[in-house]
Length: 149
Image 1 (cartoon, rainbow, N blue to C red):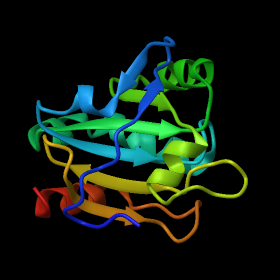
Image 2: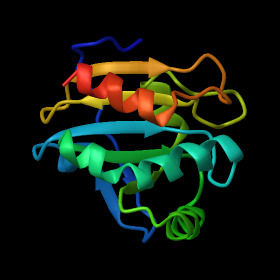
Image 3: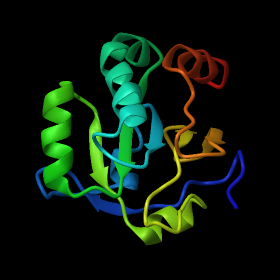
């Protein structure tokens, strides 16, 4: 089980173009909101990620990059991200990565989870939702992230 202050487990996953992206390669420029979600195209995930797009300036103002990870394939992320107009990183997660973070669900998906990482990969804030359909409303999420900067 991960805790605040722990170093986030590293991983290498594929982006929508099939390029391998590692967590350690994303660190160093600012904080990262590592957001795990169950699936592209679902209503709750669409609402959350659409909010990330519309609140891009708030995240930038906090110097936070978003990295969104689900079990969906790269081609799904590409279509979903294009539909949303997403400018954040989307990655195709694996069971092994979900297990490292303690969020693997028996159906093969990740539980909706939020991990705020500092530029060195240390966990500053984390919240794993009790049910995959639960989410932190985007405005509240920005408040929580601001508190934990």
